[in-house]
Image 1 (tube, rainbow, N blue to C red):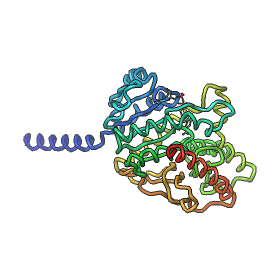
Image 2: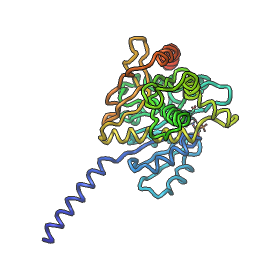
Image 3: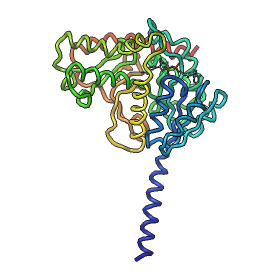
Image 4: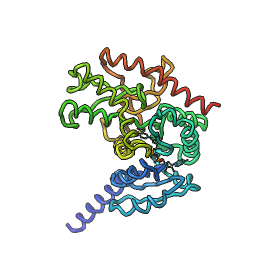
Length: 338
Ligand code: NAI
């Protein structure tokens, strides 16, 4: 009797050990010392799907790591200074990149291109060298250009897999849900919105007509809401008055997207969220990156969903989005090509 229960216990233990071992996930944050990086690192420390957290920045990462490492969750945390990028990337399965400068009042995201393009290019080259199998999540702006930059760098290195590169547009989705809840007086759990296109101004296209509470809005409410979703980032930039752009809500959004990816990677079914990926949806118009609903699975991008039925007004938004998006994507590709 005793022997049999001991065997059963041993089997159960080894089974639970092997299944949790299969879910060991090391996540790196590049830019972990910044306004987004710090709270994002904290939120990832609280995610049970993250077993090891690797924090890198050109300044301040060891301090952030020491601080975050005292949070009483199981994951281990290591911080790496400027000259230890390769060490930070060793064995990582997911790399989240919020490195780069944020906007000041009056700036567009495209104004950040000159500084952030080379930062992202160099970090992507390190990923290609050290952890070419990693899933790469780009937060650094302008996302419409930085994602094509990373794709081109990985492609040049011969390690690009379009299923493993994501532009994080989750903040637009978070804002759309929150703002629609506000104007219709509902709980945000009931006001999810699919946001497609890109991640800046007019390239952000919320598909309100596909939602129960968004489809009946009068014209004026709809227009104001769409504007607020597209330019909500400016509210934060203005209110921070020179001290940067969204950091806390962005850390929340970044942690939310990372969690969705980790759930997909470990085999959860039906994890679907908008993200900016290499996509065929508008490739016939020369636009080969686009954000739409994407199903996430064990290999990253499992399935790219089409837009579905959209209203005439949303078609107009899309018509305005596409030319800008195309320019942003080409700008990113040309930067690496030249
Ligand atoms: P921040 O200036 O507070 O932090 C950026 C961090 O990046 C700094 O700690 C800096 O030392 C680090 N960094 C710079 N060069 C680096 C390199 N080569 N390697 C590693 N780290 C490096 O800026 P914040 O507010 O955290 O914003 C970061 C980026 O995220 C900006 O480009 C911003 O526009 C973007 N962003 C994106 C959003 C999105 O929805 N995708 C929303 C809000 C901001």
